[in-house]
Image (cartoon, rainbow, N blue to C red; front, side, top):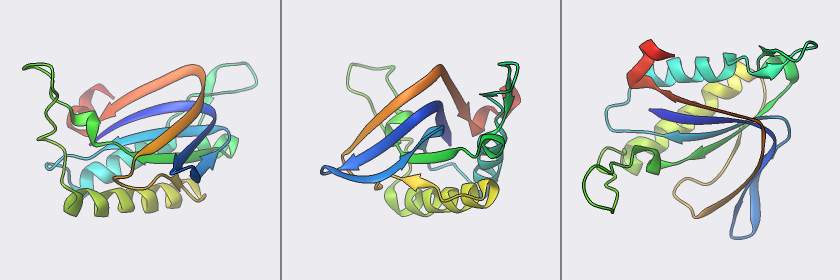
Length: 152
């Protein structure tokens, strides 16, 4: 499981010109799920996202987590995070989980993040052509991969 986490002042998702989710201050999380992912990956990543301390405190230091700032989460499924680009110019997405596995894991991530943050998680629509708007704050962008836990 791979996540690109962006600290945002605001973010929203539109599908066919209809807003499906929007937040103010918080995280835009792009989530990629691969076939090898397990419930342990979901648990680990949801804990890391909810506890990530990258929001400024009274001294301007990155010491606050989502709960400390009453921040929101906009969670977007993005299988292209598992693009393989070693050969040729056309990416392969063979490692990305198929919808029958990815959708339940995506839905479980929503529930986990809601439980951990105490707030409704805003979303896009799985598999849809989504238009994402964001105002990256910082910019602060962090990439996490559950297969590389030792480096996080």
